[in-house]
Image 1 (cartoon, rainbow, N blue to C red):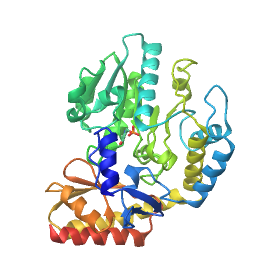
Image 2 (tube, rainbow, N blue to C red):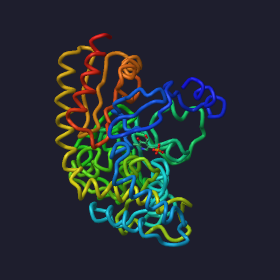
Image 3 (cartoon, rainbow, N blue to C red):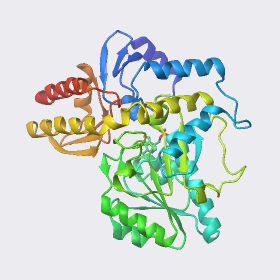
Image 4 (cartoon, rainbow, N blue to C red):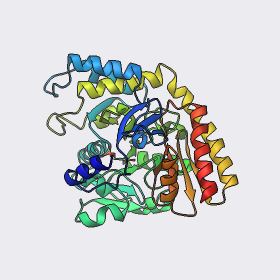
Length: 394
Ligand SMILES: Cc1ncc(COP(=O)(O)O)c(C=O)c1O
């Protein structure tokens, strides 16, 4: 593996501090490195591999699609894109879908659609977006501007004009920030990278009312929280509100890159041919992946299991919290949980990896639990017992 990593360091831009293993293959909720060491994966490629690895139906559908048609561009229609969009529309409060390739790109699409709507409804000056401090929306310049964390932004200023950041879950702060120029409010139902902070239900419901009153769009970033991660197809369903637009990605393709913007009809109508596009967006291969993921969730009963699995994970993490005083807090919904520690978590993550458990951090003091949605209770027990063992040593 060292040789491969040396080769990689020469040719791959130095944007990631990757752990020193080379992953070769996966099956179920396990990954194997080049030396044949097996790891239980509680990170799912950062909340992506909803169906785990080597999922038979998924692999067969993709293989057959590859033999048929991989790409044709949006100059023409393709069936998988129509079917995947139909699944999304049928199972949400939204009417139309724009497919793209990643979370950041879905955010860009949502920002552009919001601005187009604002200008159409209230004039050229209605272009400002309010987003949240500690939020994360991606690395492209628009998404990075919306992201409320200076550490990601500081070397890339000047960013885009017209984005205001307010304190998350503080309704007075947002009331003060809203002006005639505000076209949209953007937030994550659970701040992921920011440390697994769920939005307060009263806050989100008040925000919904406020947006309706003032004709401001409520845009949710469901890139990480969507596609069954919290036990509902989209996390906003827990809060009994309907956003105007959502951006999603990650789990949608189960490992094949795809993102999507979903919007209500009146808002979607603001986009006309030429306004927005993506060469790969709605690619038949990626949309076949999305179709299988959505079928597994909605028709094969996977979604219905996530809440129960999340409850089980909750119990196990609470047990750990009682036992180990180094744990400060436990938060999250469904299979998106965070453990906050009194100490930095890097060493804990490394030790777990040595013992065959892969974990993902969220900031310096939080471990994020976002396993494949297909994980079983026994597999959760296996992971928790490794973490328990490591925590007894730190
Ligand atoms: C909430 C949220 N939005 C947007 C993004 C950006 O997604 P991508 O990395 O696919 O561009 C992420 C990625 O972690 C995310 O968690």
